[in-house]
Each structure stands twice: as structure tokens, then as C-alpha cells.
Amino acid sequence: MFELRVLNGLHEGAAIPLTGESWSLGNDEQNDLQLCDEAIKSLHARLRKTEQLWELLPGEGDVYLSQGKAIRETLSLDLNQPFQLSGVWLVVSDADSPWQKNGLIPLDKNGNILTKSLTGKFDFLSRFAILIRPLIILFCLLLIGLAVAGFWSASKVEPKPQNLKPVLYDAEGLRAVVDRKLQERDLSSVVKVEGDHQGVWLVGSVTQIQSDIINRLMILMNKTYSIKIPFVNRTTLKVLSLPFRIVQITAGKGANVVIDNGKRLFIGDREGDFTLSRITKTAVEFTGPQNITVKW
Image (cartoon, rainbow, N blue to C red):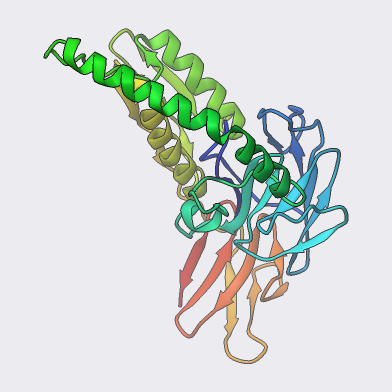
């Protein structure tokens, strides 16, 4: 099972499971992945899967690879190969793999995220830096003088550090934020936000993939906001079962299974919402809404 991950921007931490063959990306709410960052177009690009290949199709907006190369035509993507939509970095990864944002987003020599191709702009920036260098030196000397003067006149009482995080004081404000983030992740139909003046909690029965997305959302909320009331994840894991019974298993070369309706499934074949992904000497594995392993 694979998912499309958002590595930075307004929706950092969001991910959508890649079930199907094609996914639209942009700021329109009808897209499979809605990105509300600045410069994102209505239908910015489209991601497509054909057999074992991932393809990126540019739409109305700018699309770049990690080398800063602009993409104008359909491009084949490798797994874990990051790409950028006008400053927002995304990557296709295995849903079971850990997030490795710092190892995937291209950084410049100062450690800043590259947001677009720098080709043709370096010379201009270099000339500009040379012209303003004397002004920068003068400004630095002025700051040093002010700092020395301020040191002698400042009191010994250090001010308390400001809390730069947005503060969520009550259940109403917290619920509004969480509802919006659940909608962005296509979870509003399975996860409900409940609570009262004493706290807010999430309830619902979810798959393993949905549970992983919710756990990342909880971490993101506590990292982004200063939450002044209890915020608890009370969702439960939905235990799925195969909608059919396996009556025969053949391992080795030409491995396959026969199910109760007489159909024979080989590796990669799909029945209902589940795809036969692997047959070993001890187990049969299916991928779908939830990965299921059948011992034999």
C-alpha cells in the first residue's frame, strides 16, 4: 500500500492513500489532494499509476524535481523521489515506511528548503549582494552601537519568552480546527469530534492506515498549537476480514490461491477491495483498506 505525503507547507504531515489509478492535486476542493498554499493552481498537476510505474503529469502550475528542473511533460517517478508544486514538496512512499522528510526534501547550502529552480537567478543575486554590501556593513555597525548602549541601560529582569504558537483555549475553537484537518485528510466521514468544556476527543472505528494518519495529526496539532484543554484520540482499530474464503494455496513458482467461488488468484490479482500481494511457505498476504495476513 502506498500513500502521497505532504512534506512541508500549510498541510505538512497530511497524506492520502493511493488506491485507484489517478489522483488530482491542486487548490480546488474537488481534487483528491487539496493544497491551499500560495501559488497552488486549481488543477496544479495529476499523479497516475500504470502497472508498476508512477507518472507525474503537469497541469496549470509549476512542477519541479529536486534538482531544480522544471517539468513540462509527463515524467516517470521513482518511489521516494520528491517533487515540488510551487513550493510544496510531496513524495510517494510505502505507507508502512517511516516519514523521512529531512532526507527527502532538497536543501540548499544553508539548510533551507529549495522552493523553485534557481537557474538563471544566481548571477543577478550575486551582483545585487555586491551592491548592497556597504549598506549591510553600515547597518551592522549601527546595530552594534545600539546593542552596546542598550546593554548598559537594560534592567537585569529578563522578559518571559513569548509563546508564538496559536492558542486554543476552549473546545469550540479546538473542534473547528480539528474538523477542518479531518476533512483535508478525507477522515470526516469515519472520525467524529466530540467533547465538552472539559476536553475534546476523537471517536470512530478506523483502518490501520487511517489510524497512522490520525496519530500524525495528533502530533502535528500539539506541535503547531498551544492547546489548553485535554485533546485525546479515542478511535479504535477496525479489524477487517477477507470477504471470501481461501480453499487452496499453491506456493513456489506460479504461486496462487483458489477462493470459495472457484476463482484462482495470482500475485497482483484483485478480488473486491483486496489485492493478493505475497505468498510464502507460511502465510498469504493481501493489501487493501487494511493489510491482512493469513497463516497456513
